[in-house]
Image (cartoon, rainbow, N blue to C red):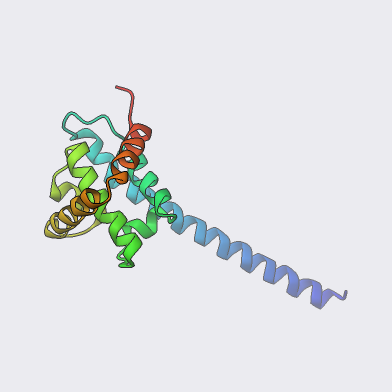
Length: 144
């Protein structure tokens, strides 16, 4: 291996490292802003002892996706239905209002209302989801 090839390999390695660092920073910023938006609502919960962050993480795990996809504008059936059930659960079990949920998901409160109604219909038609929701709520329970 001559010096030119070696220098080129070093440059490529440095570029890949730089790209990886930039990707990691942008990922950290996304999660940091999400954590900040959720943290505000930990203070205003009404008789709520559930971690909103864990609740969202568990729903993302149930739908075999990431938090970023669940919070995104993705409209595939699985993601949209999971999001609608999550809206319903967050309102019913955490006491968050439509505008508060809308701020977390960066949506309009009317979108949250519509999603909550669809989420309730999904839960009513699929009774097995009640047990799944209670399991998720138990995982998201916080110590007082």
